[in-house]
Length: 64
Image (cartoon, rainbow, N blue to C red):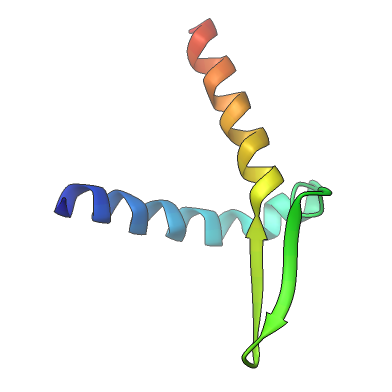
């Protein structure tokens, strides 16, 4: 359980560091990505971008 929590935290850190690069590539503005303000904070849920990157990683893994 601790190992999975560590993996999730590290993945969130990596995605937060890569977010500016992904936005420049246009990956944060797909039709399924949610961006809204709630509770005085800005929330960003990249659902479509996550699915696209997951598909690309699966395709690369299948080819290798």
